[in-house]
Image (cartoon, rainbow, N blue to C red; front, top):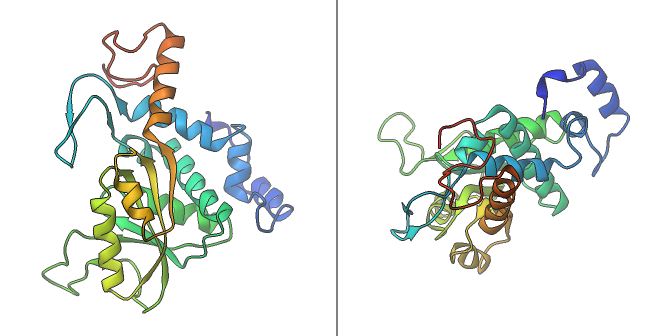
Amino acid sequence: MNFGASKTKGALQRRAANSSGRGQRGIVGIFLMERTADHKDALRKLLARRSVSRQGKFTLSSGKESEYYIDCKLTTLDPEGAVLTGYTVFESLRANQIRAEAIGGMSIGADPIVTAVAVVSGLEGNPLPAFIVRKEAKAHGLKKQVEGMELTPGKRVVIVDDVCTTGDSTLEAVQAVEQAGLKVVAVVSLVDREEGGSELLRQKYEYYSIFTAKELLEEYERAARESGNPPGSGRSRAPGDPRPA
């Protein structure tokens, strides 16, 4: 995807003005449409290429060992990845008719995601402010745990995390905002490892995942086969990743 060959902002704004309204593409949608037929598919491929590690054993936050690890921040903090992440999550909320007043999650995994969504939402003409949740309240200043917005009782918010395994960090964020008087209307994971956390969250909340780990692993393996470096050949990264294997 070549982000350097974009049309002028004025041209994008004119095209967005001609396609305004719910469900139609604004500036960011048009920007992406010029470069890829499917922004979600492009994000899936980028996550598989940049964020999936398959060599060695990895200890998860749950304490379990895994033969793969997904470091979403290598994608969500990437310029191209940030745009794709922000628009994909924004479109998911719109497609599922999630009506919220803010989007946030536990620092640090959620930080780049909610920031990207906030930027995209503003450009799309449907602003959704971001906030972050600290592990614990600051011991000084205003002593906040939820940062970035007014804590109006009953405010409708979406909670986001990058990877859902046990769901513990997501639930910590949920509990923090609920204790602050906010209402959680949806919970979103960029990647669901399908290891129990999402089922736990679904018991009480409207839960959505953008991808499953299985989808990313299948894409990783497909790309590896096509490049002539099949899984198990010694590569720790998907083909095309600029990082050393």
